[in-house]
Length: 228
Image (cartoon, rainbow, N blue to C red; front, top):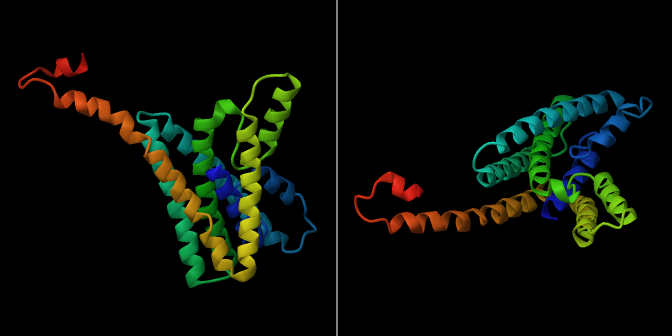
């Protein structure tokens, strides 16, 4: 739910402030790329191409990164990376509010897309079996209706909560940007940090038994004893 809120807030800022491009919803970008009569199509298509390419590349690398040892620790690393990318957008926007050049907009789109791709990779590994997606709702609604039609047990509450969180994130971002666009840039940082902290707290309990066991080994015990 925290990640879904972040995605909604991120897409709201990107769409309203960065040439009408989504950085979490690639389906929307593919549709927008076909709207050739849309005002400012040149800058929009540059942002769309950047978003799709950066999203795909970052998602591939992030999923490969998470497939190795210590997946929980690597999940935290990806969430921290997402928070750093969001913070970089905030810092840039604070110094140069309202990116004017196409290059500046594309650079901010790339940073935002990196954050969303890292988040999507985390959601895919953690929630892949539940049919919950945090960056778009089509997959979640499809899973919800498919399981309902087949009369299968499903986490209805979680799925509906994720959809609501995505909407709430977008709505919160839009409302804050009425006061100041900088607030819209700042909003996605908080849920990204919260997600990293909550995930990081799951690491300590999993490590502590091993540590306690190693501390009670007799002096001079061979290393194999610890493994046994």
